[in-house]
Length: 300
Ligand SMILES: NC(=O)c1ccc[n+]([C@@H]2O[C@H](COP(=O)([O-])OP(=O)(O)OC[C@H]3O[C@@H](n4cnc5c(N)ncnc54)[C@H](OP(=O)(O)O)[C@@H]3O)[C@@H](O)[C@H]2O)c1
Image 1 (spheres, rainbow, N blue to C red):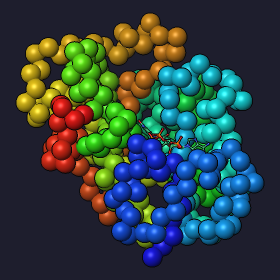
Image 2: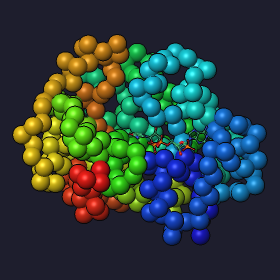
Image 3: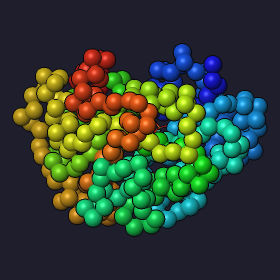
Image 4: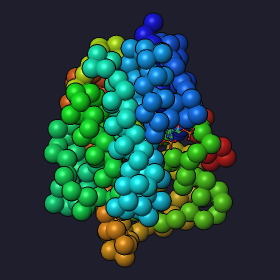
């Protein structure tokens, strides 16, 4: 059985991957106290001691809103974890260890002039001008991983049926339950990642021992925020009359950073599906699968 080191295995994404694949691989799942991306010496000694066949890095600074307050600050935790921490990790592993780094669509701008859905080989913006600070730090982290000859796996709005931390579908359900659902954007193009299909894809990447590649794991079609959330509500027999609509373009025109959210976002999965021999669900199918797994208004 292959020995896989999971970094960030307590988070929204890593914890579900661990749950789904623990019968296929022997996982090493240190918490932040046992393995800290900001402790280069500790990282090297942990990796030398355990000698994993592969490493998957889910750990990151993921609070996009808070990260905006750190813009330009390379001593801030967002840059430190997403760039310096990734560099520390790359230095602590040898070339023969398979390394898989989880990234995001936010490395792209979602701008009308450079719209998604982005392909695996779409050129990365090389300046922070049209990105969030989080997006820029993930963009720089990806570049380090790619230069070192390792794998980047991009995901977008990861969803699962249950978890304490809300996600793209369970957040509006919680807000609705609390009586303060926000207006849904009718002009925001996106895709969503079914974490169960990410786990399946990671399993193929590990078993084929793939290196030096970029993969996109998400729904095979795009939708707007309004389409996706309204459809989930309908499938859960929730009255959708009360849903209010808004325009992201209008919202962004009043924001300090007009690129805070991607308007023309989404990831294209065709190349990844071909390479891994997988077929990803549409976002409508993902909603059906989550409902089958127990997604309801009450437990969102
Ligand atoms: N969530 C999204 O909407 C989304 C969308 C696209 C891409 N992604 C990417 O997907 C990946 C996983 O995201 P997520 O939402 O699962 O993240 P998350 O829930 O915020 O979890 C982050 C993980 O990183 C660990 N961590 C934090 N600081 C660390 C450090 N110094 N050393 C080692 N581990 C540390 C955390 O451990 P503790 O719990 O101990 O702090 C936690 O396990 C990230 O790369 C993120 O950029 C996420």
